[in-house]
Amino acid sequence: MPEKFIIKGGKSLNGEVNINGAKNAAFPILAATLLTNNDCIIDNLPLIEDVSKMLKILESLGAEISYLSKRKVKINCQNINPEKIPFDIVSNFRGSILILGPLLARFGKIKIISPGGCLIGARPLDTHFDSFKQLGFKISSKGSFYYFEKGPDFLKTDNYFSIPDKEVKEGKKIEIVLKEFSVTATENILLFASLFSQKFILKIADEDYQTQDLIKVLKKMGVKIRRIEAHSFEIVGKKKLNGFTHKIISDPIETGTFIVAALATKGEVLIKDAEIAFLSLFLKKFSNSLFHLFSCIFIYFCLLILSAGNSFTKAKALSNHSNLCFIGIFKFRFSFSFSSSNSKSIILFPLLFLIFLHQFYQYFYLQVLSSLLNHQY
Image (cartoon, rainbow, N blue to C red; front, side, top):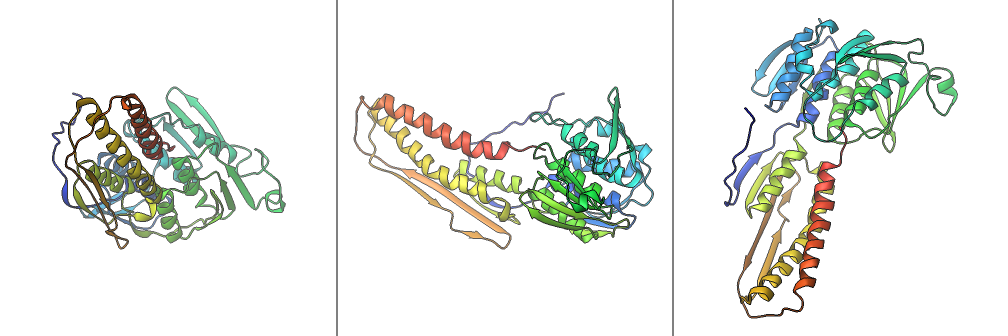
């Protein structure tokens, strides 16, 4: 039976809400436990189905998992068997692609089914496959399955295009250039490179919040990672990595969702544990859009006045978003009120209507929605 949401709106949202851990950060961090034989403790796990699927995949592979609290787990991946991948779960879960990097680093070959899951946008696996081909893996397919194994050019530098330098020629440095900005492909290479003492240079890398949270974990495990230029990382790993204890970053997407909900319902919501650092562009888009929102509101009411001859005295818009605390608390207030006067004109109606449509499209669809949706995973 298809699922559906029944929403009965018309009420302002008021109160407080705690932001949960980011699922997109949880998946690669859970995958990172495959890189070590030591215990790993992960806190602030979001209680969603996909996180449960990732834990079931680890458990099927041989991981020992115990819950320390509702959102906190201890994982030990000492006895992992790559031949026990649960294909039924992997085929229904997009995030399962992140086991590829750790298992290839640890075992050198793998058979995996094409990951399934959500169908948001076109997100092929080409960038992952191209990256591992650059590392010297042979990849073949049969039906829905893909087979990865080390080729004769494994971790050599002459199997793809790169600008040669002394370290590349001497085999001390491996360069990988991603085909596009891909979050999970970036994470897969970071995870893979972490078990090798050679220097890896990863270019065209994603730098979003989930990647940065994974990097924090890998550094705790003993991996040396530094940003050498825009969208480029230098990674130097080691054969035996430490365990780690880590609290997953609060979800910026969830924070943004509550901000939008509070604005849309003219409510007052206190949002706790928000990661403001990753919302700068989002908030800027909103601050720009608020001006144009007021323009739209003004034009809209002008249209009402011009078309219906209703009387209004004044339209007052008030935005107060100064109550923002950077120590884990975010507060956004928005309200507006109207009262009434006299005005009428038919000549400007078509012009105002066109301006209204342009303002709405330009600043709400193109700027706000596109900034949220235009990202590759």
